[in-house]
Image (cartoon, rainbow, N blue to C red):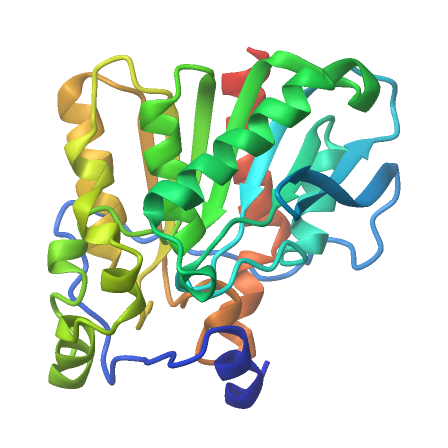
Length: 293
């Protein structure tokens, strides 16, 4: 994906000229970007454009094997500016083929003059709709996980820590303490984030930090972050991981060597780590353990 397409996905997107320091207590995981997950997954059934709240829609992909299946709600990233439910189509299908119902949800952003409270309400409303219609969709309403990337990882973490129904959270390179979001990055990034017009401030996300919501009975967490992420420092997911562990909760953190910010990585080589069989298998194995075990 080139920079022009990236800027269309997240208007005003900025990258630090250098990566932030990685947490001292982490050991980077070497990822083999080959093989990649299938481009055209088989063994799944897809339903697109399901309305669930005030014009918002979700896509649902489920295993073709009769259910009920555990539910995984994917929360897309987009810098609190966009929430395109079509993101991670291959990745979602890979997880669904492993025996899950995977929903990708739209939520309101600053483009609708929304705040984090609205976005969280939308995620919860999507869970409500899917569990209310669990029989029709082949969903096991007692086994629910959240999965988010970037801004979606932040929302998934907050929702997981404030909704007792959630049993597992997968957070890929999401923020956990927005007061120090640019720590370790260049001056340009720090200046941009300090601007009150920045979407983080317009979305009032700084008022709700996942790291402040940690509790001992939190759902199980899996964190994945690249050590060359120039948008969200790896220290953000590690801080939440450490807080969860200190509280006695179940949390696993993987730092991917040389990886960037998902599909917004600096180059294709970095991005391909996130669509590798190795990384998606880490996710499915975590979901198997927490939602099936």
